[in-house]
Image (cartoon, rainbow, N blue to C red; front, side):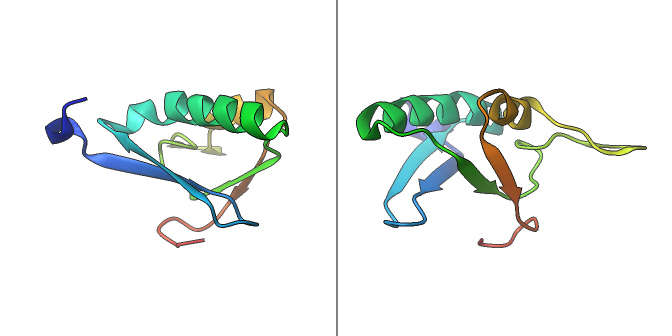
Length: 95
């Protein structure tokens, strides 16, 4: 992996243990793929399913605004397909 092209990062933090996973990304388009890798790894190791994901309303998660409001992007649709509840915070907030 060429470190020069890694411009973004995503973290996954367990609320209970505060254990953190950090993934480096070339672009925000990799978010869904990285989440699916993380999900498979954690669910296999812990033998439990991810139930809730808390995230901001960033474009990589939700998609875009339309005349009828925000539309679900691929990330939000993937969460729905796997029965994972999405809890959204305000954009730019730490929690």
